[in-house]
Image (cartoon, rainbow, N blue to C red; front, top):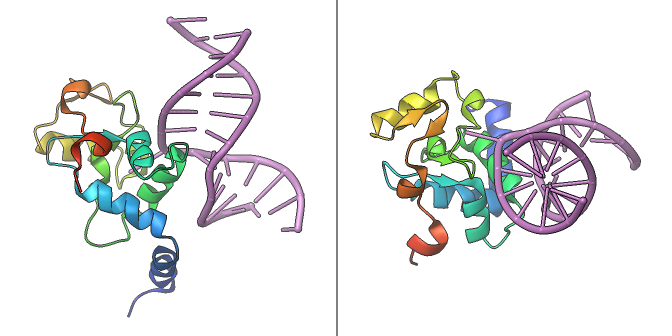
Length: 123
DNA sequence: TAACTGACTCGGC
DNA sequence: AGCCGAGCCAGTT
């Protein structure tokens, strides 16, 4: 039996499709590639709602299928959301496990592995 | 109920 | 080059 908190979050999921869209895009990020909050927001047509993308990531841990929130960083390639994972180093560990180099909380060669849904996700 | 707070970004100074 | 304000909008206080 699901806890009240889980049920509540589930209700939120059903109510706000924007979040689902965010997660849907995030799930399409190829392994070893990364994108930014702004890029996802821009792809969804709400360019100025990058903060909401971050908010969606905050709730991403409670939804299935799993959302690779660690592949979403800020525009500079910095792991700004690392503090929100189970442990501060989990985000970096997950990225390194996919061969994504991280140095000083920043994705190395960010521009080369940056994945922009607006230009690379063809529907 | 109003005010504050962000896993953000951009533009202006 | 770095700091500040605005716009986004759901959740929290």
